[in-house]
Image (cartoon, rainbow, N blue to C red; front, top):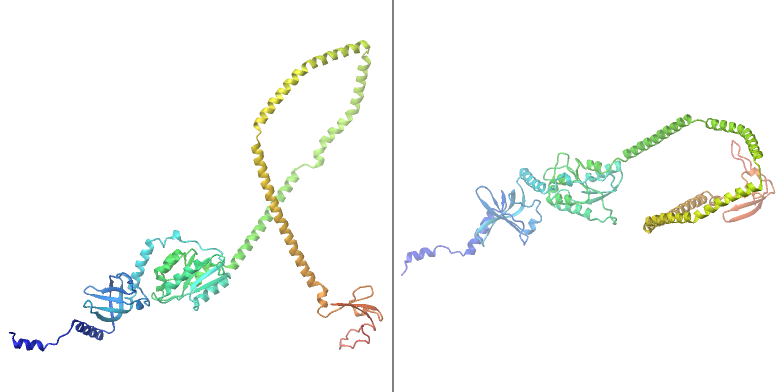
Length: 517
């Protein structure tokens, strides 16, 4: 039998279920700590769960507090949690009855001061530098004369107006603006999407593809420029096939995009100066080079002309060159007459001394016949040897001759002939087109200068009976037959009176009586 006193004492204590105790504690904690700010270091962060929620813990040197961020809140965060980052979390404390522990449900999270941001920035900088994204070797030179410039910035700020104004002053070009937010939690995502979008534009499409990109924003605090320290922005700039100029903040402001970009400008206006040259300076330089070229050509021509004149002065004249041959010719001509007379006398003396007889002629004919016979005997052998020698030479030449070099040379000549024929057709077509354009221009000029266009505006041409145009009324006699040409035809008329008098200096006079019919 049980003790009655003990039984009564047990009956006076209220009984609670596990759920009652758990939910009572939950209400007490939530009512007491409805809204708190907790500072601590993120521990155990592995990124969002498959459900979209994030679970981790906040800790300091003596305690640890479980934390969670619901999916809807996580997408609105300005800063993403990272392992080891010291943050200030704002939210409410609650309990989780399923495990009998308490946690903070975070509504907002921010780094614990600029020191934390700088530490996070240094950590990102070291990681990206280790991957080689900051190497100078991968940076590309900017195009000297871009045709299209793409600008990634806010369309309503002063930055885009400064860039367009400076580009217009230096070298007017086509500027395409991709509007983005330059401050806030979506800055990194929008800027990286804009850079990738410019690179995705096809060459020759409806929207021209830029030759250089400018990512620009005005100055601000570290928190204001934090979107340009986003790792996604740095990787988008590194992956860009189009050279990128970074112009974020003032000269003393540095972000991750400044280290990755191909060129860093101290200000947005400086980025515009880096992107385009000064048109006036280029024109002046071209004019200077043209003047130098013209002067060099003139000086070379003068030197060549002087050298030619000096060489011409050193050469003897035609009279000097022909003086000695002419003297020799004159002397030979003088000796020729005397030599002919002396030679004729000597030949006559020799002829007179020769005694001619039939027996002498027969003997000479017989001797010449024997010479001819001996030569005839030697002729077949000599001819055979000559033919053999020629045949041997032709054989050697024939062995050296081949058809292939001739065919190769013929093919080369044929190709050159075809090329010249094609170029000739193109040249004829081009010349024909040029003449056609000149004819069209001349036709338009003729139409513009023709007096028929003047007639269409209400004027007329007066001619006399011989078809000569009359310029002055004084040239028309009374009763003269006139031809008046209008725009739509010509009519005949008879002059009924004299020419009108010129107006007097004091006023206009009335015309004399008379008219044209």
